[in-house]
Image 1 (cartoon, one colour):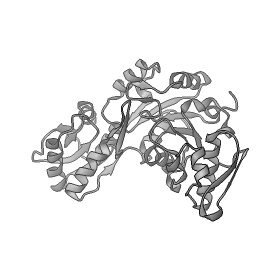
Image 2: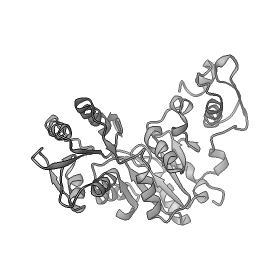
Image 3: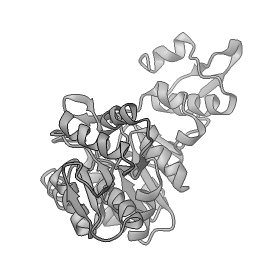
Image 4: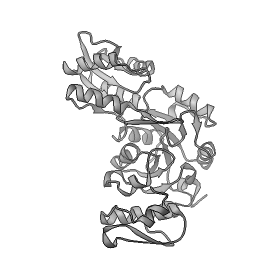
Length: 323
């Protein structure tokens, strides 16, 4: 275990949707991996952009999936969003809530006043994911934002992983309001570094590791916070996206899923890999050799990021299963 990835860091910050579970279905091996981290003495934190559940609801969900946790180990974009509001508003200020009752409860706990209609005096709008968000709720928010209310989006994830596939996320609803108001929201969740910074501080960590499945939120948030990251292929990220990743969305390590935390550090690092040679002749990425396809992807990402060449030769694409 001494050479394992989790042993190289003093905390592990897990994304949830697409990394630890898909809705009600746990990622195989996730409970055992979280338990291994705890047994090693490595603090774990669960950092989610999903603002629809309160920390105790997240704990109940994790416990039901075989991963007992404490509310102090859960950090949500709802908490981050309300923190931004609290820093900018006077106590008792009215905040129009577009989201779940748990988001409204976070507003109340912060000493602010949640409302559901654009009444006179509304000073801010906070928007988080809820399967019950309606056109009417968006209309109230639209009026408030157009009248000058501060607009905080808990997150801007366009999609939400589920056991049925990708579903519309809070970012899709945020996009509707952005179109209707010509206003940009203040974003609280990933890829902003606030959630990761807060989670790392709560664990007393100086060298944490982020584990996530989305380049534009999990990995970008880690880069923004100056934290190493492991990108997993159990959720949204695809080989093609990894190869084409911009510098702000490039992970340190790559694995099929979070169970790789118990594997050796150097086996997971994105970079040149034994058994594979990658070239860019003709302006395409071509690979020769033999071995693990994830090692091939690690080597391809390294060369693509170094050279800017991202188009795959047909043979390399076939070896990755069509990306």
